Image 1 (cartoon, rainbow, N blue to C red):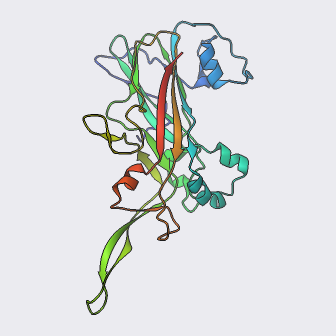
Image 2: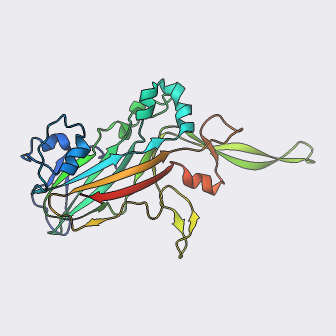
Image 3: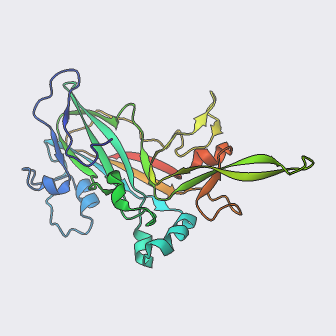
Length: 282
């Protein structure tokens, strides 16, 4: 995902793509010859009406795809970062986990294009680490694109993951047995084994058995992952909305830093938080 934030390039599907059919971001829409939009899209990008965008019940010629990030930051993690970031209460409330993923837009002629969405607070990172050292974190947001009709389907790019940026260093400990001098007493103690710098982490869907029972709770429920959207009607707005909480573990009594027991399978699986994705067509 090194090309994150760049203008999407045409991607060849079953045969040669025609002229690129994506107009990137709401701002570009205004200069791309689209003079009226679906009211649902206008409500998403300009809820106060300050931009004065014109609307039509079902404007022809395009499909709008938008990403809405409603996720929040866990209070324990926010408490850890608050003093370091020197944020006001208002800034704390407006913090959003930085989430990114790729979407494939397939057209009725079999060709497709891929775009990478990214949205969230770019300043949400422990200042002990230079934010400029994380180029993926500092790319421009992209949360709206317009595809020229006709669109056959929209889905998460096959073989890729939804990712969230972990804004802190994570320390992994292992519980080991230690034999005291003399060999008469054996005690157990946590020993640091690994450190992971702030970085994007792939979110994983719960592991379930053949009956659908959860075996291992991860980041996304099996019914909460974004589902493919087929047969998209021209003039529609397709909104991918994420709700949830960014969180990391803290091994209390062992370290003041975000930390975990590397042998604690449940805790390791939950790193990054819990999220729910919904896809709506309006």
